[in-house]
Length: 112
Image 1: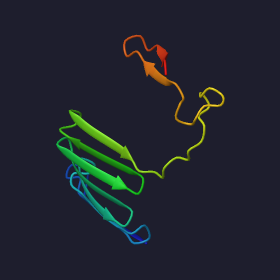
Image 2: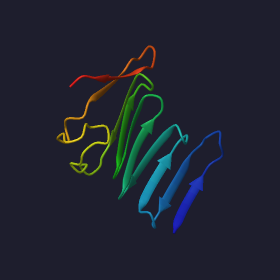
Image 3: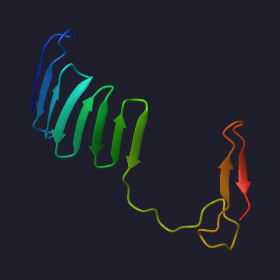
C-alpha cells in the first residue's frame, strides 16, 4: 500500500508513505529538498548545499555540489583467488600494477 500527496509543481511539495517498501518521504520542492526514512534507505538532500543518501549497498555524500562528492560501495570481501593478469605460479597478490596516464589516457604496467 502506498499513499502519496502532491501539490502542483510551482510549490513542489510531496509526501509519500509506502507501507509495502517501508519508507516515508517528504519533498518540498521535490526533487531539490528531500527527506526520506525507511528500513533499507535514508536520504537527506537540500540541493545544491548538502546531501546524504544511504542504502544497504551504497553511501553518497556531497557538500556544495559539485565541490565535494563522496561515494562508497559496501560489499562482502572478495575471495582470495588468482587474478587473470597475474603471471603463472605467482601468489594471488603478486599481479602487476596498472597505471594510467591522465593526460594521454595510455595504460602502463608497472614493474613488480
